[in-house]
Length: 58
Image 1 (cartoon, rainbow, N blue to C red):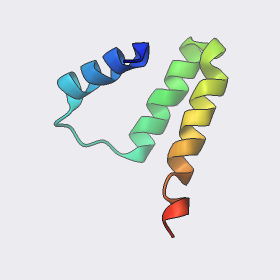
Image 2: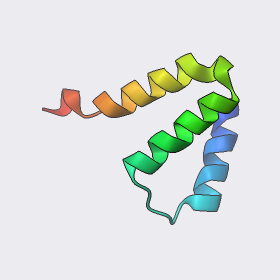
Image 3: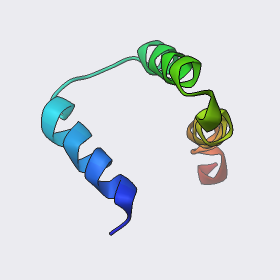
Image 4: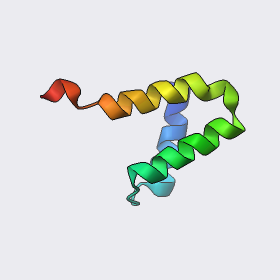
């Protein structure tokens, strides 16, 4: 188990029944980077990965 799995599990436990828009998620990511600029590159990589996630399915 990776350390991040705990955060992911908490996210699912607390908010797993909610539906959110991509716009809402983008705003939360921006807010997070504003508060934690040292995570800019990992957040950018995650956002890019999410944006391109289904490209290989075509």
